[in-house]
Amino acid sequence: MGLTCGLIASFSGLTGSLYVWQPEITAFLNPKLLTVENFETINERSFLKTAASLSEIHKDSITQLLLPYREQQTISILFKNGKTLYYHPVTQNFLGEKTTSISFFEYLLSLHRTLGIRNIGKYIIGGSTVLFLIFLLTSGAYIWWKIYVNNLLKGFKINWNQKKSKLNFNIHKALGIYFLIPLAIIAFSGAYFTYSTYYKSALKVLDSFTKTNPVTHKNHLENTINFNDLLRNSTEHYALRAIYFPKDSTDKYQFRYIKDRPIKAGLRKTKEVALTLTGNATILSDFGIDSNSNRIAAQFYPIHIGEIMGIFGRILVFVAGFIPFILFITGCKIYFLKKRKK
Image (cartoon, rainbow, N blue to C red; front, side, top):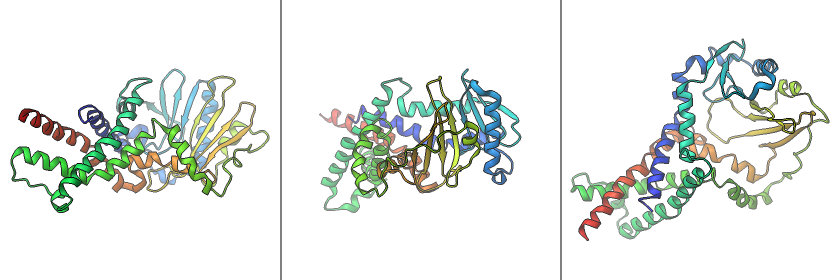
């Protein structure tokens, strides 16, 4: 398992580490597309007004319209022809097209989640993550405990003056135990993106502690509401993040809201509203009144990437992402050394 799942976990860890700093790197490389001067002084109504105007101009050619969020301080539109264009959130001026560096991080995320293999890639990553969590981490911790149960301090130390073979083993056992909990949390939260259905089913056990009936909020906002009216009306607790346009006459608009536009520590609070072409709007989810299972499920992403703990959490995830690769290299050396001795 170390030679197979360990290798995939190493790849996933390295790509994940690089993606942790995607917001800062892409903003630095694309200041004209992603950053706006005096962004903090722009109010929400300006964003919504610009979004409404751009959607009216381009109408049926739009697939997605994304408002400022995380590193992106501008408004971007994904068109049906595959192009992504960026616009100023106040003046509506055209800023440019998606660059290679932005596309690179999108491809990096695809590799991290699916190895770039359609359909089955996410199951390879997800399955390896589960095996890494259940067998590799736990068996390593068990071996460590059996060896150092009577001298725990020795199990945490690395003696840098030993022979190469013993030093290799020391690095393996020390890093493994130091990062046991962070790696377990990252692996557990990462597997959610492959097996979200099973996670949500298990989390429904917690819904018995929910005071609000999770079904009661899934009702129509009004009998009928216009697209522009819904777009222009800002909500008190959320900021509009994205609009997903209908693919055909039977599809719906989807409005996605987020609590905070910039990256912040803490819980991820979201809201989602569906709007039919006939004007019927339905709240699909709302953190404020969602069930416990939905609230917890919404936290897997900020936990997985470390953002729930702010900059400290992101640094921890960044460093922890290299550990599976180091454990893989040192583990291989231990494995082949034993084979030579046999």
